Amino acid sequence: MAQFLYFLPGASGLDLGKSNLCAGYGLEEMAGGGKPGERRNARGPEAQEGILVRAAAEERPLEYAPDRQTWANAGKYWIGMWNDAKPGPEDLGRETMLRGLPMPLSDHNTWQIPQVKALPTYLNIDETGGRARKVLDEWGALSQQAERFFETVEIRGGQIQYRSPLSEDEQHDICMAALGANYRLGPYESALLQFPSSADYEWILWTLIDITSIVRDDTESAREERKKNSESDSTQ
Image (cartoon, helix red, strand yellow):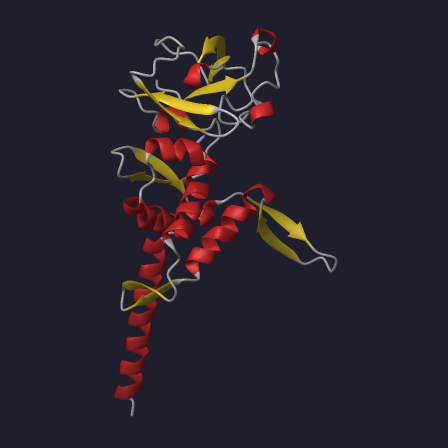
């Protein structure tokens, strides 16, 4: 098991037992998903006194060892990891994960990418009694981001093309939303891991919108259209 390390500068021994300690630094989700995790007083980056935190205990001691770790300043806190034990999908997975497809990516790990068609829904009933399934509010933003990418995609003759390609930063943000749905992976964690890279963007985005089914449906539609045209020609 490999965990990210978080250093909270200025926190003292009096804060060790506080349930809202990580929340004060915006880390209640990343540093343990709201659980206490493991904490200890320590001297961290820039010789500051504070508290070291990680989501769960592991064999390796919870300590600041800059010669064997990589650290980055995240504003209110510092984030680090052991150089020979980078956190991966098995370490960062959420307790409840969205259905999706396993996708090998550039970090040589396999990540479960959610598919928008499988997002949890509920039955909405309007004032006229009309019924329609809607994506749960929790996943509404991810659904909208997937739709935004989908609108740029055009299938021609079974080939994927783009009407108006998104910028790499826009692609990155949608990929992070997809990964973040199943993993405790935020922008600083992503930057420290140097993942996902631009080489991953299309694979994640295509999986999110289920491009395979879209291409298959387009191909079948084109085949049916050709069949109809052929039958029409033969009757003339």
